[in-house]
Each structure stands twice: as C-alpha cells, then as structure tokens.
Length: 521
Image (tube, rainbow, N blue to C red; front, side, top):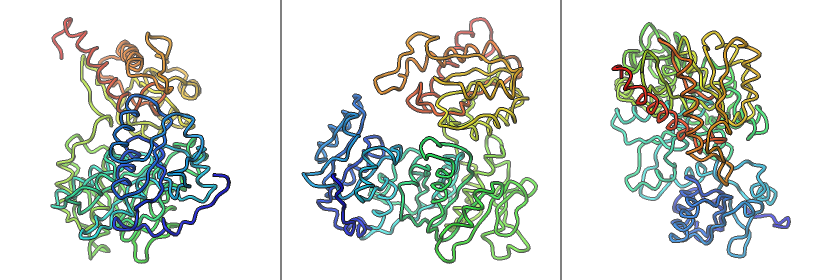
C-alpha cells in the first residue's frame, strides 16, 4: 500500500442495503463460514471483491471455486497472500471485511489499519444492511460473555418463538447473521451470539437490548491482555436502546454497564439466581420472577417460570442463562407466559454438559464446549466425584483457581492436548494426590498433524479413544467421567464439535465392546 490513505466518506455512507455498494473495492479476509457469507453478500450488492485466506485445503479450494462462479473477482489462497494487503482491480481497497478469528496484528489487517482503511466484521456489515427498502428491519438482541452464550441465545429464541414472533439465533452460534439478513421472509427479532472477536470488529451496532453474561480470563493470546479482552466484551453495551442487562453476581459486568455509552433512556437491568432487587430478574422460592418490566416493581414481581419447567434440571448456570434471556425478550415486549413456554420447549445443543451414556454405574458426560476454565467449572461443580478428561490449547489462561476450587471432587485426571504443561502444573500444585494419566500425541498411532498444523480427525480420535479407555479403568460405581477440556480444541481437533463427537464415538465403542460381558446397557 506504500503509505497511501483512503477517504472513508463512501464507506461511512453505507448504512443500508439500498446504499451505493456498486463497484466498492473490498478485501474479505477469511474463507470460513462468515467470510464466505460476507463475500457472497457483497457480490450480490455489486461490490468488487477479493478474498484472501492462508488455507489451501480441499474445502477452501471448493469454496473458492464457488465464490468465483458467483462473481468474486479473485480468491487468493496460501499463507503468502495473508502477509500483505492486495489491491482490488488495480486499486487500493476501500474496505476490509474480516473473519472474526483474524487478529488485529495479522499483517494484512495491520496494513489496512495503517492505511486508514475501515475494517469491519460480518456483524458490522450485517447491521448496516439490516435497513432495506420495503422491509421492516429486525430488532437485535445481542449476547456475549465468557460462557453461556449459546444456551442464552437458544433460550431467547425459544421464548420469542413461543410468543409468536419470527425469531432466529444467529452469529457465533453457527448461522451467519448475513444469511438471516438476506432471508426473503425476514425476521421480527434476531438474537445474536457475539464473541469478543466479533465485537472487536463491530463499530455502529445499536441493539434493542444487550447482555454480557459473565467474564473470566479467556482469549488473552488474541487480545494481547485481559484488559483488552474486557474492553471488547464491554462493546456489547454500546448504543443499546432499551435494556443493558448485567449479571448482578459478576462485578465486571456491572462496571461495564455503569461505564457504557448507551442511548438516552436505556435502563440497566440486572439478573441474579437469588432474590431480585428492583429493576432485576431473579429467583424467589422455586420461581423465576421479574421486578424490572412491570409497572409496580417496587412492591411486587411477575412470575415468569418455575424451576420445574427446565426439562433436564435447573442447574444454577442454566437458571442464570434463562434469566438473562428473559430480560432480553421482556425488553422486546414478550409476555411472561411465553418465557415459561420457551423454557419448556428449549432443547440444549450438543457438546454442553451432554449426557452420553450411563453404563455399569458410571455416567459419561460430554462438555467439549467448555473451552476455558470458567466453562469447565460450571460442569465440574455439577458432579460429586469426577474422572476429568481435560486439556488442549490453553489460549494463555491459567488453571490454578479452577483446580484449587475443584480438587476435592477430582478422582483422576486424564490429560489430552499437545501441551498440558500449565494444567499439569496447576494439578500438581493444588491437587497433588490426584492421579494424572496422559493420552498425548505420539502415544497412539497416527498422531501426525495435517498441513495446516491441526490434527486430523483420525489422530484426534486415537487420542480420545486412549483417554476414554484410561477413564474407564479409573471409574467406579457412582463416578462421572466428564470431558470438559477447559481449553480450545485446535491443537488436536478441527473444532470443539469434532472433539465432542470423537468423545461420543469413543464412549460408544467402549460400551459396545463391553456389552458381551454384561447385560447392562
């Protein structure tokens, strides 16, 4: 780019689907789910698009072929292309739309920032496109937090649908928000799960209601510091119009709301798993109640649901997520009856405290989505005696507090992951009497990473099979084998879902292998 700077007047004016996107020179960084969706959308708008990604695998090449067919000018695959900012049609890019996983210090993005080129995420792009002639834009409810995001957006979606609204959970939950924006029927409400990465690249969002569920150390490697992580999480509240929802049991979220620059008239609404104060939702006896969205909140509360409405039990973290979801949908005008109905009809997704099997007195639980210590603790505290399968890519976090608080419930720890040094050190320091078994690369056949540095599914499956076998040897009647890694998966598995599926398959194979020796299934 040679130090050139870009006039942003045109991109500043792009605030609707019907704005002048034609011929806009855009670089899309990343060809994953969000990058593909962004490139496809921009082509539909008439922009001139070049896509860049370091990946060269078959899936990426197939996506590249598809994007070229729909009209993308060029797709540049290979690590060398991610090291600099390409021109678009022999001109400097006017906009970069990045996939959320790309770090700000990545050379291509750093070059764009240095040149003054706006950098948006797909969520920022979607917010600008939500206004479309002849269609009422969907209201946005936004959710972030270190843990519980997917459960909360799922519960909110269920409550909204129970009230008769056309609603969808989108964003980091799996469905790209741009796909929802382009839906021909449109939506009344979108509930967005937003990661700290997505929030970093979002600038002008103004949701109806927003919540940060909780915060704990995570993604320090991406943000550069815990302070940077907190700052991006706090962006969830910026420009909120009706309700900025916070966790009364998490002081950091209270501070975020107190310091947020919201729209005048926006209210701070708390939630707690204890008895609520005024302008809060909480629990009284066995009821979820609302003292925020009722007229006489000083002297009464509205019943929203009962603890018995939770199909698989009202674990404390699940109740907290439901209260957060209820606060969001109540801000959107949903009646109490729909909150209860939404809880009753909600079905949790896979890989979050998911019962896999109960065999020979041992309960097997998959919580592969516990990709950090805070999430793993929610699982661990739900069980009395645990054989804990843990480890993976630590993302710069520490494990001392997690291990110290849960040492009494640990019977054995089975370690997976390419580098378990931090977790092992914490275990030896705070749980020295707990046996540690390692199932590491090199101890089973096929442990060779693929060309992108991520272990293939076959090698990951071998590690998980070894881990399940070790856990089975250590487990006895009444024990729970819990796979809650407290770490990301990418060192041995393509995703937490692949890791969870490998665990489920390994447990299935173990149980089937034992079946001929016993009638218990």
